[in-house]
Length: 270
Picture 1 (cartoon, rainbow, N blue to C red):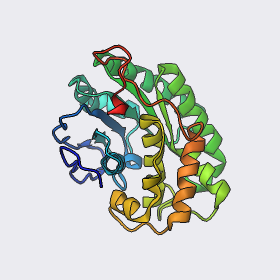
Picture 2 (picture 1 turned 180 degrees about the horizontal axis):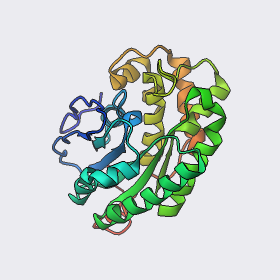
Picture 3 (picture 1 turned 120 degrees about the vertical axis):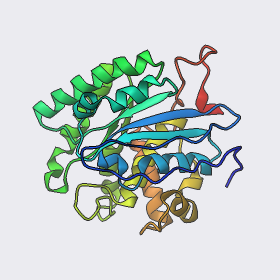
Picture 4 (picture 1 turned 90 degrees about the vertical axis):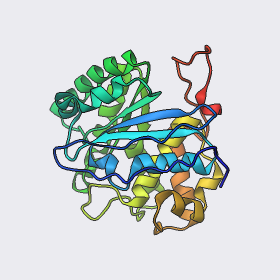
């Protein structure tokens, strides 16, 4: 594991019904960090997606700090109503704020997602951060909704001119290669640790531009997931390829903060 000037240890995150939970970020390392806030519900909290993303970064020598405001069953409109997420965003220390609600495949849910994302985007940009949409997946029993879920989040991302983290699309890409990959958890809605690991690969790819081969090693993957994933390296290679395909290819431009002090400065290169 590469040496970092600070070890990115994150406090455990537990999703609670009706009350937003949050994680306190650790102090930034000496080199400039990207700081990301996740706003969502248990689809973000289960298996600690923010923690996985930050541990991936730490394993590959990237400076990334992760924080979150989550509440079980919350939509983005619920987060707007409580005001907790808006207050955290207004603290102004973020580079990216990732927004997530349920699948949002139905027309009324899509409308709600788009309206709430637009309202959040105004708050996010006022705090000099970039909005992102963390696109999830439907219940297994409604697998026919995968395209509609992807379209809802694509439209919301387009509305706000933000980043897209297409996790649900990566799931479908992975199943094209191996339909038996265990991406759902026991309730067939929340992700398994493997499903969350794939989602974290997608976010890593979108922030840093490519996924290093280190992240498909079993020892590294298990350390990132903080559990023994029930798949071997051949399946981890499938996850990496699925994440790349969902994001448009194995390599793309890393995140470049439009609010960076130096014009055109890319934080992801640190």
